[in-house]
Length: 371
Image (cartoon, rainbow, N blue to C red; front, side, top):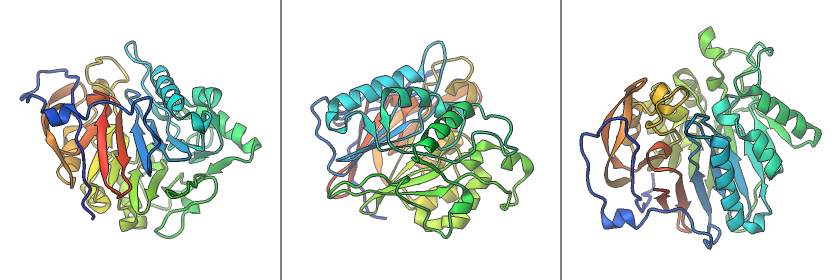
């Protein structure tokens, strides 16, 4: 895979315990803290915002002429409200990108769990969304019981179906190894930086994969898998796929998943990442969307034990780009954390707030962090 140059940003972590090691920030690291300022021009190719929505996921892709949002957060606890965080971030973004007229070309919902759909009603109310792409399964595989965030997805699907702007992507729609794309999935065409947006996995109506019943009934395994590429420089988003679905995805698509940047699946859960996936994708950089372990209450990263040490080790050991050593907090189980030293280009919203990756005209990447 091509070498990808990286400018490294600082990492300040929220800790449940005192980390084993602590190194001072270098001048080079400090110089790369800070999100794009209000006067920042549009990206030459693509700028990816992994937004801090706490224990959840929301990733904004900014192009020269458009923007796309994948998932809408997020955590709702006594100390953090993802709707407020997401709204504030998007308001700031559109204030800078006034040329976009508060419009998202597409919103993708990978699957109907509340930590991915919580902010969807707010996004649809506050901003113009031209296309909605989902896995088409707001209810369980029996079609009766709503998933935890299924009501938000189902209501949105009904609204966009009336406007003929809804794309439900099922696994059966995806033939061959190259994924699927169409005018709803890929609604962006910028002069000089026309992204290729494809879906490689979707909702399954039948258990043709031969999974155990509990695996098939798990909405995580029906997540959309989305690859966004500009001139073959790609980012891969795997939603919350777990091990069995990851193996099926690799069997179906293999090296077509190769990408420069990986959004680590399932918030760094112990069952959301495999070495086979990381080796196949072969990323130089990666990001985990998760909450801060400092918020010690239910429905937080601390309660779930995200990100797990094993997942962090798996990803960080295989990345092609480096960063100055930084100590972060990783989970050894639910409500149990310890220090871990990162030396490769893995970032996390729970450690350093929102993270922005930008691709240059040459195809190289840099990363900056909120703190």
